[in-house]
Length: 72
Image (cartoon, rainbow, N blue to C red; front, side, top):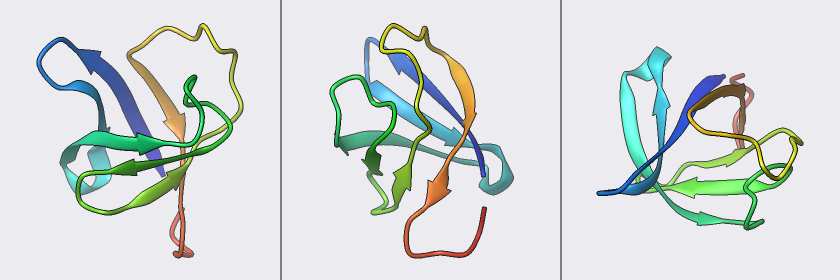
């Protein structure tokens, strides 16, 4: 699924899923750089993010895969 990741001073890192019209803060992540590991968002979803360079600037739209689901 396509998701947008952004950083804001008020909420820190957050994710927006246009297909679901869902915006949630990122509450945990596998790697400090985010890329190539999982992230957990406030509603409980765990998403796998693609490999990208550590200094990739935000906001960015990427394809993420929801764990425990066949949905893409």
